[in-house]
Every structure is written in structure tokens, then in C-alpha cells.
Image (cartoon, rainbow, N blue to C red):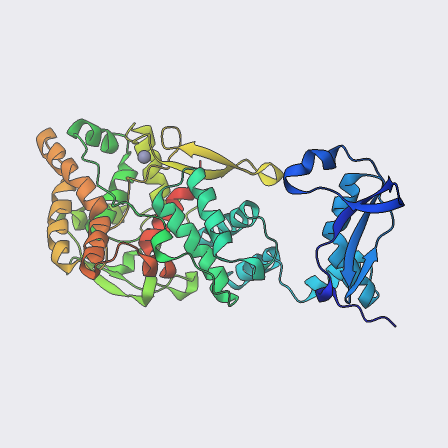
Length: 433
Ligand SMILES: [Zn+2]
């Protein structure tokens, strides 16, 4: 049996047979600058290649494209023949020990099944987008060049630096999980612009509250008064309120699968006026256990999404935020580019402030207290409303302070651990309807 070694072959060259005064001879097709001559050459064509140190001639090819294709495939053909395989089988065995990116994504998402539905959706959207935008199929093909290609795709799509950073980090989770070391050099990571809280004018802010019904008002006052997260308000129970001490205790509730983020049970002081509002609400409580329920009597949720809808209807969106939503139902689901001009996706609306702001919390409680007075003058109203974006953006301000303190421009840990902030933003990116 002949021992073939694909490593001994070198790039084949294309030849023609031409008649000379000495008879028929092989003549190499001109390459490089003389290419036009090659294009006008007439078949048949032959490949000359070296195999195990010996020069070989191929069978004839009847067109130049065919011959060129054969040049490209030749190393595979030789290897396949050496192994007694067809070309297709060769490709199969080569790929047998490799992990397609698609498979890795599915496995990764399955491992993350315990995460929230929103998180899974964000991961799925991002990872599939990554797969579609790069030209490789296998995990082991992912290198810096591929990541650069993905980053360029994100830039071309017009995503903000922050979105680019978030998505690259999600891809990094996948790579880390699979032991792939490729990362973009730090100086190539997207630049995250500092977010500046948009100063609202009074008339705009009035519109936000004016667009709320009474039920919505108490909900968002609860957010302001407690500084709680979306899920924490969802599972806020009457039992958690101490009307005497004017506190709200965020506690885990195993029967409904609620655990405070970072297992952080804590007690929050309530503004007196919020306590009054809650006391009044309790007298005709919509539910005996939960403070806020939906029409089916279950704990209500998606408060941020709803706030964004109120902001949209109140005409308060900036009109500039862009994101991709998945619209349609069942098989009809497709990604759609939208702006906050038409959809409730404005990133300038936040729901909660940070939990570790004891120093601020007193001031916030004070401000919130004023905002829950039942009889309220228009002047008071506009003054409080002016404070609202401060309260809503307090969490962002705190994050900025943190970044300044640690002297970082990037917020990898935040994305990596999926802080509530990034989760809220991620949710915002994907909030639909
Ligand atoms: Zn916007």
C-alpha cells in the first residue's frame, strides 16, 4: 500500500498541453500579472503536484474553474484517499471531534435554564446573532479575528458601546465555559459612554404622572419609597409591612420561588405618607397576601416595561434609543429594529435605585414622602416631579461613582454577574409590546 502523506503535497499548479516544434508539452498557465492569458486559455487543463516527493500529473479538466476547484480540493482528496475515505467521510471524521458553535450554544442555554426567562432570551438572541454574523462553524475556529468580525458587525448595526460590550461579554461566557481563550484586546473593547441623565422640564414630568392611573401611581410611589427591584415589588406581601415601625422587609418566599438578589433580605424604612397610602389600600386590599396583583389575582410584574409604556404614552421618550425587538407570534417571530420613538424602549427610564445607598436612602425617602401626599398642589407636584428622574437614575449615578472609584471604564464584573442594573437594561432592550 502506498503511504500518502498530505503534508508532503504542495500547492498544485495548472498546466495546459501545447504543441511545440518538439511535440506536445505541458506548459504552466501564467499566474499573477499574466492572468488574462490564463483566462483565454483553452482546455483541457492538468494539475501538477508533488506527492511523497514525486511529481504527479492529474487527469484532464475541461474548464479552468474546474481545474481551480481541483487545486483547492487536492490536499483533501489525497488525504481522503490515504485514509480510504470519500471526501464527505473525510469531512465527517475531521469534524467528529469538534464542537459546532451551534451545539455549544444549545448546551450553554440548557445549562442556564435556571436563569430568568429574560436572561435566557437575551443570551439566545445574542449567541445566535453571533453565530449568524461570523463565518466560522466550530468553536475551535473562534479567535481574535472572529471576535473582531463580530464587533464590527455590532458597530455596523449601530448598537451603542454598552450594548456591544454586553453582547461581547455574553459571547465570552460561552467561550469561557468551553475553555476557548480568545478575547479581544482591552483597547479594542467597545467604549462605553457615560450615560447622562436627561434633564426633564417640568411639563414633561407632569405628563408622566398624568399618564398614570391611581393604581399605577401607588405602584411607582412604592418603588420610589422603597427603592426595590422589579421582582421584589412583585412579591411584596402585606406581611412584609410593619405599619408600626414603618418598615418593609424584603424576604425570601420559597413557595413562589422568590429569593432576593444576592440572598439579600433586608429591611427598608418607609416614608410615613407611603405607609398611610398602604394602610388605606389594605382596607380594600385587592389580595389578602400580595400588595400588587394583576387581573388574575396573581403577583403583578414587568413594572419597568410598564413604566416605559407610560413614558411612551406620555410622549416622554427621547426618540433616539435603538434596539432589536422580537415581534410576531409563533413561527412569525422575527427581529425588528425599533426606536424609542415608536416603542416603549427608552433607556432613560429606570425603576429602582441601588440597595447600598443608606446615605441617600434618607433623602430619597424624604423626597418620596412628599410625593405621596394625597392632596398636593401643582407647585409641590412639579417640584417633586423634578426629583423623579434623580430618583429613577440614582442607581445609574451610583454605578458611575463606583466606576470612578475603581478607576475603570469598563464594567465587566457588572455584566458578568448580571447586576440588577444590567438586567434591567437588558430587559429594557427586549421589552416588547
Ligand atoms: Zn429613548
